[in-house]
Length: 96
Image 1: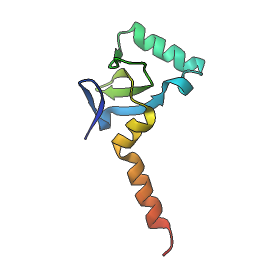
Image 2 (image 1 turned 90 degrees about the vertical axis):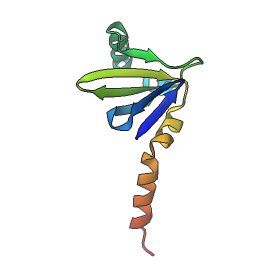
Image 3 (image 1 turned 120 degrees about the vertical axis):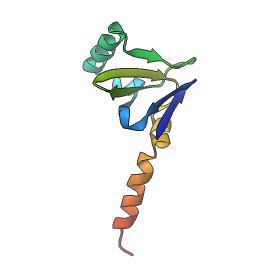
């Protein structure tokens, strides 16, 4: 499956390492340093024409790529279907 990040950019779900909210995750100095290093090494791609809201960390073949997008992390998470899988597990565990 694929995840649409905005504009004409899609990534394979199996390559996604994490989806992060820019506002809350960049509070950490470690995250800021990591993003700065990725930018310096040419590994950051801005797929947003508007104010960015989140970034997606991908890894494929040992190469790490960061995508900056205007789509919220919550919306991207919904698009992965991951939360649907968790909801289905919880329903199965509940006694009838």
